[in-house]
Amino acid sequence: MDAPKKVRESALVSTRWMFPSDANPAGNVFGGAIVRYIDEIAAAVAQRHARKNVVIASMDRMDFHKPVRVGDLLTLKASVNYVGNTSMEIGVRVEAENPRTGITIHAASAYATMVALDENGKPTAVPRLLPETDEEKRRYSEGEARRKRRLGIK
Image (cartoon, rainbow, N blue to C red):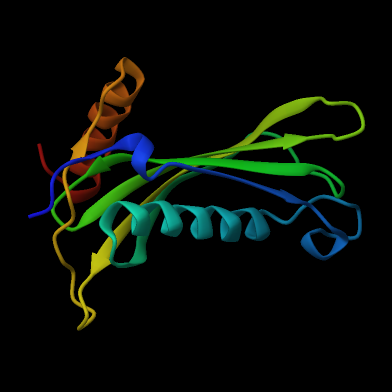
């Protein structure tokens, strides 16, 4: 088994500009486009942690807080919250910034569960997570509780 890894070793921040191809005719970015970008960054974070191919198993929370508009800069901040045997919960915070005004809003949040796969496409063990800060420890504990609820564990 690989040595435990720190949250910061796999955390990522990604920014992309929202174009008309991401949106409906009224200029609101499609929720599905945001979900796609969340899936992409969650997979990248999980793959960096596991150093193996990964797939999404579930997204048990996807909350849209505020609309995102064409022209906004969409910033996704993602990190591993919790690690099971073969799965990892990745937390993603989505912020939208109007680059003309500088106003930034918390647009969406999600928890994606990613599973690491071996060379035969079967689930495989991943390194443990070593939370360091109080915030990381809180996220780890909350992620563990969400996993128990997902799996029906008391």
